[in-house]
Length: 495
Image 1 (tube, rainbow, N blue to C red):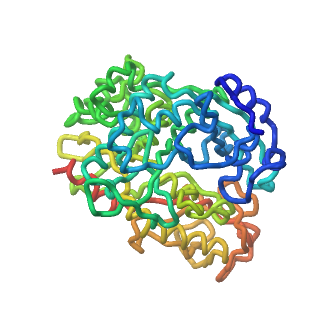
Image 2 (image 1 turned 90 degrees about the vertical axis):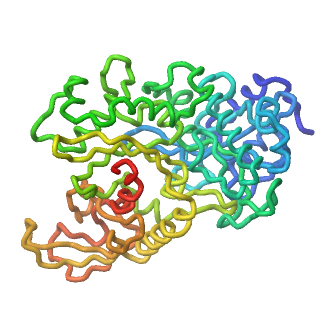
Image 3 (image 1 turned 60 degrees about the horizontal axis):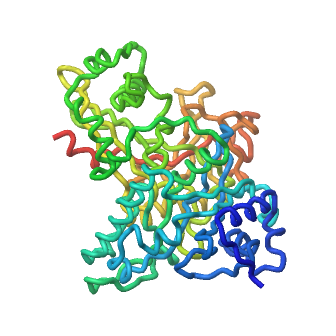
């Protein structure tokens, strides 16, 4: 017989007892399969509950929804959510008749008992274990609650206007409507329009879940905040508030900005480094023109998955630099799938692009100096992510699994007279993004500090006879967004 949990404390205490338990432990006498949701099903099984699709909370009497979600350990010993936290399905026909404070969404997800388990690629999934549990009450953080309210109401507005088919995660801050159904092909009817819309569910972005993980589980909170008072969010979004921070400085030269903020200009300092320094100062996080250590430590930027990228263009409005992102691990990428059986993004690059808002901070070289031209938020459209960019990712995975082709050719500009080329998609293929080394160092040594191990031996052409060129290690790679794509997105700031 299913036990009744009458209070939030009872639910949380039961969850605490699951800490340290593996998927195999939790699945005993349960209803657990090998599918993606197995950990969530097993966590429910721990409470004696069978999986269902009810609109009410799992622990109805206590008003608590049960969730299990993976995290990963980064190379810098920090922790990050591996994926977004998917909540309830969006019923377009019911949504238009609801108000946020009495909505099915809030009734079901207002209080979440979240079990965090570590994704450990080197061991079998059945041995993965719950590391920590958190009772998260949405209303208790007034700033977050206001942002989530804004996002929910924006979804409702789309549906009210008969535009559910135009919903995209790129429009949302913390709470986003992720697609459900393999390849986004599951369609539903919507009110106020004859056009069918993709099936979607409310989800908390991976950046938001990472913030919960670091703040409540590992005690790593080091962030500053742009929004000091929840009242600021009553009629403005995070994006509008951020844009307002930069607006007073549009048209200022770098020299004037440095003088204003007390930043020393070093002759050997690259544009990118100095421009980053200035961008942090314009945000004025600490109220005294001092500078936070990194954009990633801004609370709202982490939760809303905002990635700040400074862009330097010349007097002809050309940005010569492609835009880099963190290096991927060959073996991890080879083991990933673009999406799971429910159509939810699972590949790291896929999840990142769907969640992330790029904030371009643009400078242009002019006759009277290097001028700050403004900022622009941009998210890559889903249709491009699911087509062209997916092709690049699939091609990269295929080549890693089958064996990357490397060719050594004579070259006068290198220390050993050789240049090494590979068969990954390059910028010249004009696919919005491409693959190239993450750093300026090349490294093909076994165990090299700038190299990563491939799951399959390299297909060498003219392999050099040297220990500096191994069979299965090559320079770390990352995805880069083409400068031509970036130029197109920022051109309105340069008119």
